[in-house]
Image (cartoon, rainbow, N blue to C red):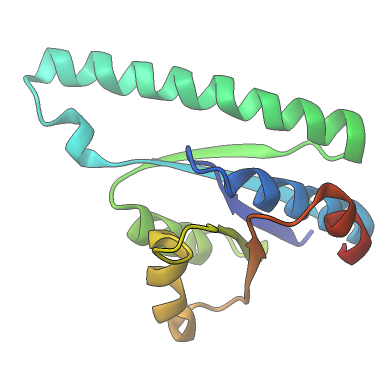
Length: 151
């Protein structure tokens, strides 16, 4: 089964990327894999403190994921899977794409800020030639109705 890989983070544009991935998967018979990356610099403390912080980060990710997963299951009939990796976000996204041959499309949300589309979109589009799959970039300010129309 072809899966849409979407990145779960704290950005606002993440919402539209999640919606797009779920709607496309529902319309094409695919699946959704949600990737969340915990950057290593969050744990540069003493080992015991770092382990507690790592576990708290995982709990936050699971809670955040469950909000999206419930919507995907209830509204789109898609049961997403969660993958949590630790490392630099771009490196871990690239690694996940290479590690899972079922991933067919990487879905990213583009920020609407004047500073640009966001660090992930900027860095991953630079590496697009090294990816074995296409990247779909979803504008962060698309309405729900527009997303439904294009998926």
